[in-house]
Length: 331
Image (cartoon, rainbow, N blue to C red; front, top):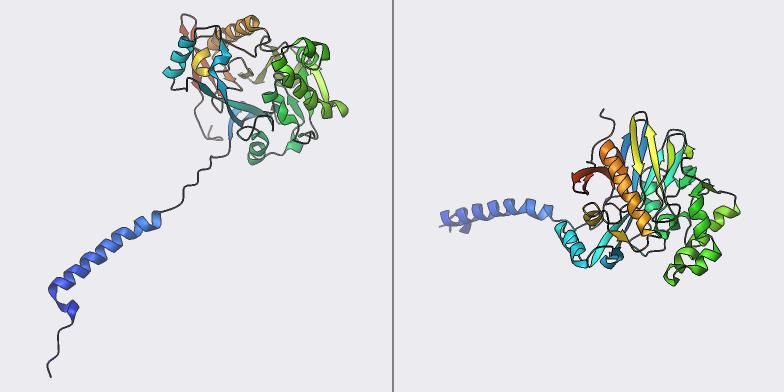
């Protein structure tokens, strides 16, 4: 009896099978590597040490500001500065940063972000605070650079309840007396009404519980944290000097609203400056001082984490030098 050869015994067929097998083996890792995009950002906190003090930058989010809010310069000059730094020349993405300071004895939050006041892209401070390893109940003081909504609205939740049940809020007396005054509110531009209303609503639960206190420049709020006069943007706008040993960090609030413009042109002001001339004078004074000292600074509207140094470039111009990401506990 004669047997027919199996089809795959033919040399050509065997070669073809080997090629197909090799191709499948090559494609297997590619198939295994396929995965859906996550499209979620990492948690918004950054941590660094200042001597023995732990500083955690907390990202509250970002919103878009109309370029027309920048004043005291020709629009074409402002657009040129923005384009130079690849910033949109119509709407500027503006970060909202807050800072959590652990001195070892006190847990202090500097500003509370915008809460639910500015839509879904802002109000992430509380979630990032928790992700960073802390709880709102642990915060024993909140110190406020000024009483604009993007700095204090996070002190309450959407129902108007205090976000920090064990914290005392510290506000500059000048800002307190301005933003909580019915008389001042009545004489102010109608577009500012929501700022006055928001300030009163935010302060209410803390005032009711006697956890709202005022301070004056030069006050040491807790050991290692001192209030520094920086008025102009608001009547009581305050910076805070954080000091540990020979190291110093100046959290300067809203001295700068846009990094692409105001370091090169410090004379550019912002339309929510209550006193634009004084805001400019304060900015020039602080720029000169911190550029000379080389101390760290932090700003609420600088690109997150908003910590770095200011370099003097001559001719009244400056540059922003951001801090580098680095691990902790290696020194």
